[in-house]
Image (cartoon, rainbow, N blue to C red; front, top):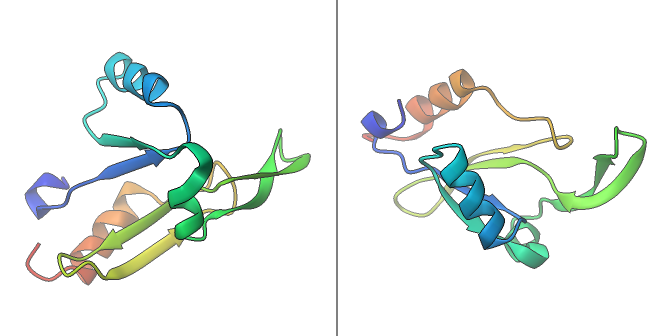
Length: 105
């Protein structure tokens, strides 16, 4: 789906490289994963803040699931910032946005 559009997906997570490597192997995960220990990348993209956690009873400082569509020219052309750890856009929405926002993918 994304490959035919010439789109590269990268996942960034706050887990250690060791845990991410294990997850990728155990789940046959084809997307590249970058470890963001210390939330440096999350802070740079302003997606590290207090959000509902612990069953939504508490607000915990964390990297919130977010999607950024970046053009070949390195411009952010679309952003989706989740409201909490479970808020993610559907594949259908992401595909529609890619087809709309990216010219000649």
